[in-house]
Length: 294
Picture 1: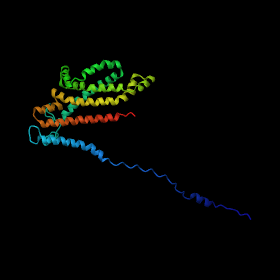
Picture 2: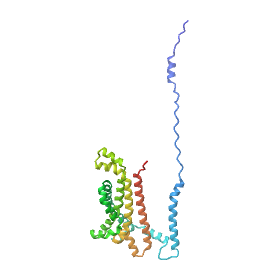
Picture 3: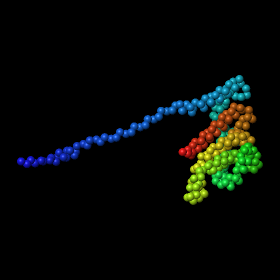
């Protein structure tokens, strides 16, 4: 007896239509836990400067508590509130708020520093790149660099016949030396292997400067720029005291003529804060373009 086996086509269809078993997925990697906030590092960054400032004000208050010609911190703070309530007033060509005087000084520093950078950085590249130029210019730099910046002010007055260009000239002559020296040192410290590769590839002098020297020398250039800006801001105050006009230096001297010691102390803090902000800005730029050799 032969038995026949019959397949139900509907059963096959039902098997095909049955839902597929879900495929097990690999577990997702756990997110790394965020490191806890370092409160100690924050305190170490914030607390010491605050304590130092508090110590300064405390010593100042102790020395002036018995009165005298030197104002107390409280009187100076009250004068600062009144002064900065309207820092941009105009009562005449030489009677302006402290804000206008700061901007005028920054403008002079910017012009003198910009001219110094336009001349000093290329000159530093030439001195560092070519030995003949280095031997020719280095004695002149060594001779002129130690000269006090204010010694150049009468030369500027003689040549330009005006106080404002003479102040810019003084900023120029005192700002150029750090940029020239640092740029030249940076070029001279470029590894010889870089220049040997340039000779093998027969690169032009322009490509050697733009593709090899400039990236390697940039940290040195920025260091020279930072030193030059600090020197320029230091010198402009003294130069404006001698030349007059509008500027933070002239403002300090004018307040001294009025025997307003409170405003002089305020100006000292303002000059320091502006210089500190310039320093921080250039340090941030230098860190952005600096690298560490492994």
